[in-house]
Image 1 (cartoon, helix red, strand yellow):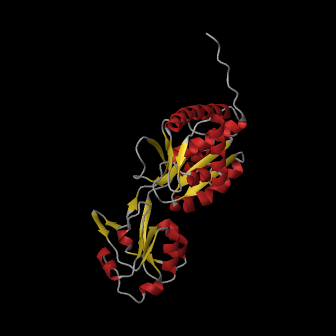
Image 2 (cartoon, rainbow, N blue to C red; image 1 turned 45 degrees about the horizontal axis):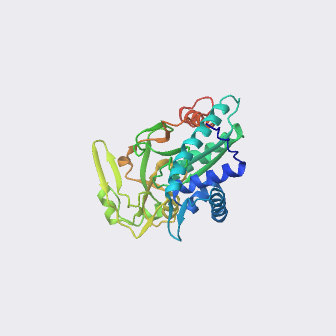
Image 3 (cartoon, one colour; image 1 turned 180 degrees about the horizontal axis):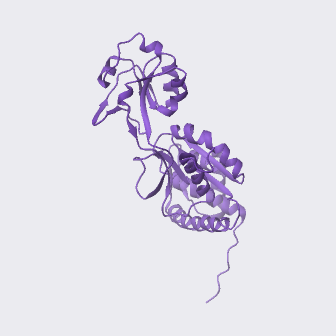
Length: 311
């Protein structure tokens, strides 16, 4: 039987195959371009070049949808296995280095970005300059495997099964707050139901629903559907509107601690502030941990426990 010659794969081939792999996984040139850090037009050009070299159409695309052909699906499945092997091989090599090298992609909810990443990432990149970190800040639930992230940060209790979850903070207190100038002209709030007569800044969650505010006093747990003419989908704007005297907003106490200390905001119903699960970092249990992630976890955990790496 004749020996089949080994095909030579160029750097361009690997780059284009990885580009196709991203498009096939996300079924979107726009999302794949963001993930790869290129323009959609450059990505489209790379796919056309790959199809031309292979002599096979891999994708069917219109102005609205992208779908893999039968050949494309077959290739994408094989590439996932092959590139996973390459990634694991490189990670094993990185284990022999004294310092981690590589790139981390993280999906982080906005509260975690403000309270953890903004404060601790400068220290991480200073300690590990050979690790590039990309943080996507969004509150929608993300399939971190399908969208190519190495790890995510979410609240405990919202993390999908089959992931390793590491707590990064103490349990979190949630509070309703408003500016003194607003509270001074409205009826006092004695129980959660009193908020129904107030102007509340509603919150649309990452799942697309308007959040019902939760309150707890001992064993008494109440959920209130608050009224309001304003609705926001991020905490920062809600806090700014509350500071302006627009109404009552609901957020983590840590997000407004400085405003509370300065008297710019006051906690409404302080005896009813619930304490909920902490921030958790999570990553796939069946995938080898990428270079740098262990070091990032250690830094975040040290900050929580006040260990030697904490500021």
